[in-house]
Image (cartoon, rainbow, N blue to C red; front, side, top):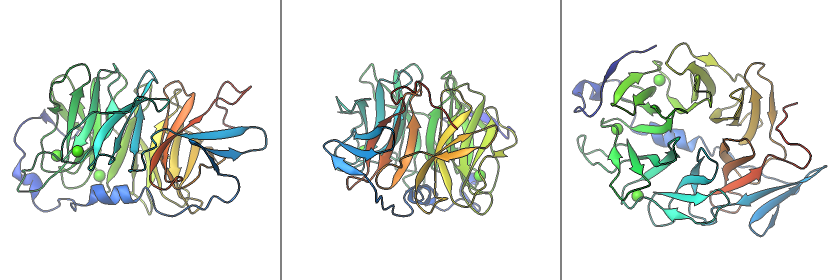
Length: 341
Ligand SMILES: [Ca+2]
Ligand SMILES: [Ca+2]
Ligand SMILES: [Ca+2]
């Protein structure tokens, strides 16, 4: 459903700041969810050099540690051409946005600000990086997150895309680059909104008392999946890209979050605690068939991202102490495609 449509860049309306405002900590709470329990990886998981080698029956899966800074490297997002990974890190003292080649080389810092800059994603044309930052200290003294867009080709300062006293977070581009979907608490609880890049038009996509988090477009642009605690747990839901009725995708006991689509738009990978610890699962959307990623990565795993061509997976794990970004090939010898069966 489309609940409202108006231009951004107007001053925030005070009526959004009264009763019904979400707790200031929804953003923090949603992030704590990402590391709920410890995983003891008993068999294999032998640390070797840059990677973690976990032997399996038919092949060797190597999870390469790409970021290697041990300073909370998180939120990896792969560029549309698969060549780059943008991410956030605290390696320089406070949260900043970085970019590296998808093999981990050429790590480069993109933001220089004392505020918390993070959760980046690249535009489909590969020319700009969307990120969230609480660098504007106003809204009655609060530091709340807004969305910002940085041009990679020039040294121009980032452009502020949202301006509201609530947190705006988890921004992500539509595949055609025309829209940015994000989570915002601006109407009293955290719902999904989409912002038209061209002219700043804003549309509300969900309206539900639960917090709607981690929105992600399907590669065909038709759907948005997200995480929301609408029942007794965090589940994944899907809505049409222009808004509409939410379809619940997960129902097994345990929290489910951070979905990422395979290139066919028919399968997801996501994090679930259904086995008592953070584990990655692949799901066929039509049938609901779900299997765990095997072998499970070492450490507490979260934030999986499938490369646009489906050839590799990146994720975050604390398997080498602090959170770092790992890469696993999804193309074992003799198996040119990911088969879910
Ligand atoms: Ca910063
Ligand atoms: Ca805001
Ligand atoms: Ca909501």
